[in-house]
Length: 321
Ligand code: SF4
Image (cartoon, rainbow, N blue to C red; front, side):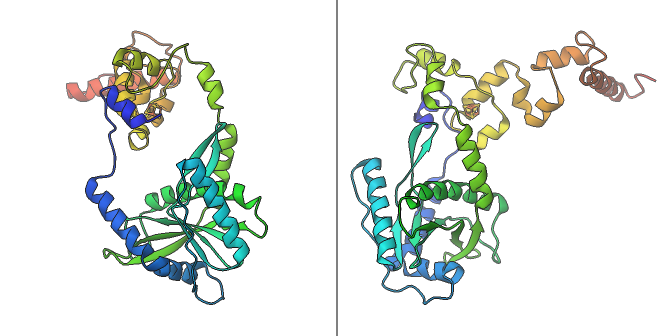
């Protein structure tokens, strides 16, 4: 489903999204990196991952146009096989990869995949955040590594059926050098992220199983009337946490619901963990005030102690001795 459209239809549009300026800047940088048949990009690739061989020349840039994501994924797989067989350098610009997620195909589009003469396939990610003195923001590099690991997994499915092909676990991250718009690159080893993602994918509940738990007739079409949509979204369990704000289009909707229900999850996962069996703000306040809760429960005892200290601080003197 289109979660951004769903969030807007629910009256809580997505809290994030790339600004138009950043989008244009990112596209211009990518175009610059890939200009001239990818010469600069392949130079960077060879410099960082090319081995002892000659610098790339006569780079093949196959046409990957086809109808629909399925057609583009099939075209990409064919181009990868042909480039590997040809034994030269090739650059696949915005290939389309397919990966089964929870029993359904998901289509992924890396910025580029390079084919080396020895049959190695390397994922290339082009980002617009700067690399200053050879290093970039660790959180952004981590996110790029997780994203690239998914591409590596998808490429491995094709490589299994391609003689002589091997997917590199070191991906090339290309960013603007310092604060210029000149490209620079570094190599990121994604073996750990790949292993984690692979494990997570095997544990995902199949989409059919999730759909089977929904009430009959539930649908998420943003064109549906709002009460109907709200009921459909309500029928799916949600565990809102502040981290959702940076990752999910429905975050504002789920946050409003969590706050309205007084759910302690809205205060953060660590607070939630500290509060043990108390699941609402009302329960926590009642426990702190001594109206509810077992005094032998360490959480309840800690809350009462904190409430006493607070009262003492507000009164300007000791509340309990
Ligand atoms: S709980 Fe978080 S991840 Fe799940 S739908 Fe709501 S905002 Fe998205």
